[in-house]
Image (spheres, rainbow, N blue to C red):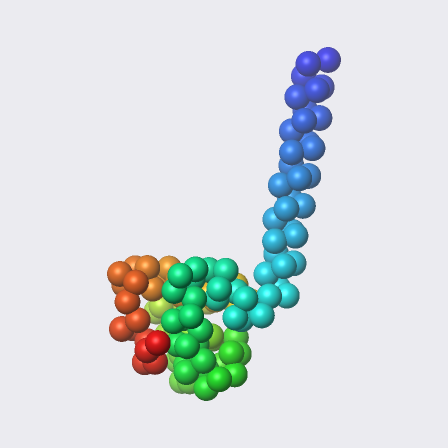
Length: 116
């Protein structure tokens, strides 16, 4: 009986976790770029929004392209590979990748052409 109760509890926990992950994925797919940037960048969000506005020419497009540079934050191919941006197309995924890059550079905007 005890084993059955533990198994049922684990099954229920799995459903809750999987449901939570799917709900988060659904929310991230519907977030606007500004919402995603605010969710990821916290106190640096206003700066990040200014950088993205400049980098994308004001379009806030996740598919913005300038040569090898791609996405909201116009990250190059090396940066996309290094910070896990490559195959991610949602504003939230791109913001997370840019955050990792921003943090790795000491919270400095110097890697970007546009500054806040």
